[in-house]
Length: 283
Image (cartoon, rainbow, N blue to C red; front, side):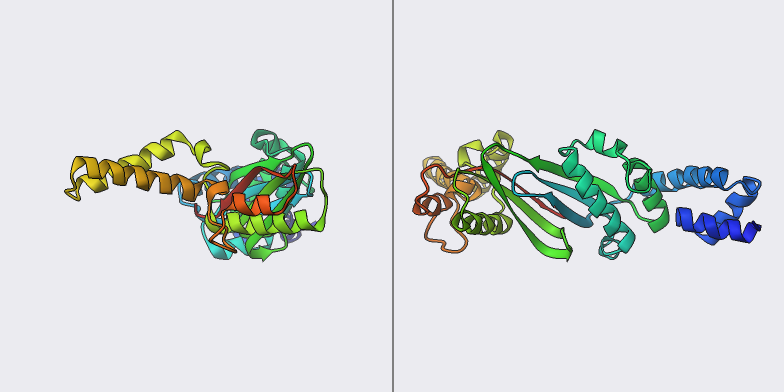
């Protein structure tokens, strides 16, 4: 095999450019396996520099079925790369592996992909080939006994990849079209309303404290009397909790009702919202 043929083969295997492959073949004395290792080392070097940049674009992928569903975020620097075929293929395969590994990132990175290389090695190679910072972001698997999972993808990029995705788990023994329709509608509600917790009393204390700090500062600058300011502060905080707890939120499809009201109107005694996850690119 001539050096030119070896360079072509190396390009096909690694996806690297002609110049890099040509230099690697010369450096390895014509040994393709050694040339692959050389490019990998160079790729890691290139990737490490790119990791200093911001990656605020990307996609959210959802995999699984109504009993076990997983969501994973993969970030890149530009929307152009988020639509790149190599990037999309990597994320789709990664999403399936994520579901099998219950969103355990450490285990996921060690998993072998179809080409026999680990997720981590494929990620490094993809960074070197595409030329952007690519990172694995948030991920979660929802699997609860006696539940049915629903999902919603907003601004779909391709198939199971989108810019925003939601999974919600409904606990009930009933498996009817009514449950499935409500699950889909609730997923859409969560996508639009972005609740911070299932119940307003479960909102993280640090979030509450931060909001109270902002409200207090705002009222302090308004010049209102202290007793009036306290009443206004209490009202604002109650509204903040109501607007950010899923059950107390106004139902997007009929705002005069709360999510809790709609849940009761379904007249399914054992129906409960078990949990949910919402991930949006850039948040």
